[in-house]
Amino acid sequence: MGQFLGLRSVIYGVGDLTRARDWYQQLLEVEPYFNQDNYVGFNVGGFELGLNPDARSVTSRADGVIAYWGVSDMAAQVERINALGARQHSEITDVGGGVLMSSFLDPDGNLFGLIQNPHFCVE
Image (cartoon, rainbow, N blue to C red; front, side, top):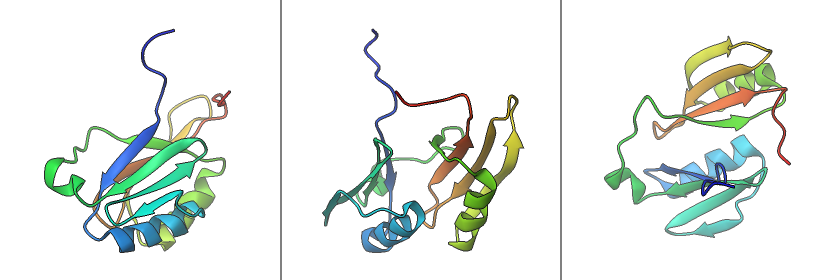
């Protein structure tokens, strides 16, 4: 087995940690497992979404790197996320084999994606 074990965490830089925590709590429909003044972490299906107010000053968000979070109903999630005030970055695209992808900008401008992949399962 190689040294890389798969995606474990995605950490977004945020301007207002409380506002970001509340927004992601509503989006993900789960409470954070770690909730401190300097970091908030959510467990999303065994993977971590972290919110870090210090990361905004040291990271540069690039349009070419997107972490994709799995969903089972793309259309329903796109509708819900748009209603939460995210800005849709890319429309739903069928990339082949029934795999659907879309991306959004959260209120802090972080880019994140959704993927509905009927061929992928977490063991």
